[in-house]
Length: 468
Image (cartoon, rainbow, N blue to C red):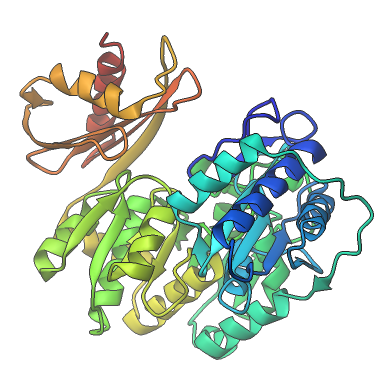
């Protein structure tokens, strides 16, 4: 969300801004009016869908949610606000149970100073065409005066808990674990549904409601999950899992305290799902994810495709285009049979089921995976740019023209420009370069079979980014 409330811009999943600077009541009301205008034009001759509004544990999230609802109600739109903080997957679930659109007040994994808004539809992040229209209407919107209106409230958390209990029977499943599991909520809203996993085999940490996230950043990256790693080792747990601030994405730690990158977690989950013998459909993953899933797809003769960064793109593949498994580099996973949305607690239950059925330590499953499909070392680096690159495709085309025939001694096999420039070598090593579009920064992602080679790949990205 830009610092001026006249410009509202979607990132990979919604808008974000610093509270009281970019993310203000005025900005929220302007966005809400944009949603109201979008619905008014989209459903000109038909009944407008009801809107459900959820919020996370951040500072003022509940009040921002009410302000959002007030604007919608002033426009004649039925809007209901959750009676408690929600994990984002719970809000998404509500959009399959009588609500045509969902609005989630959350800044997900961003630091405590931030807040934001996600738009949900049909059980997942709203597709790009919907968010583009809302963005357009929001930029031009003039909010109706709407203060002090009566806003209906409803308990949506219990519906989510019932859904998980019916579908996965977590208490029965977790009682079969031959040891303990640690779940780190990093003070996020995933802990609102803690009753789903409570029991003697589960140790939950960082569960309390703390808008400052205990001084941590609620992103389950390796640098942020030291308490999880410590708890796994201290309790000799079978594994540990951490959820992000709004409960939809995870990171995974082995019984040895080893942090697994998403480029290891995604193929672990995929391999297990295929082993169950009911895998029907293609594999869809973000362009920033790794090559082991591609190799598994080749061996199993399963269609494989990549999509731009952002779960909304692969969620669309799950919902409407025959995908059976979807994954993104930031730790979101979903598969056929559930709602088309990443869900931290659902992923936790699948990992538990996998260890119960495989009867092997998680580290052994990782070793077997890499013995069969190769080692993976994935790293990401943020690289300063001399100027803003608002057009990713133009940047990609310019850099592509300057590429050498080989990189790190391997021929370039193919390039992709669906989201920045991805360079894939003949041995599957790859480098992805994605300019921010709004900042003097480029995100570079790389994967090889060793840390040293991956660092070299990222060094090449720095040189390529300097191409004029």
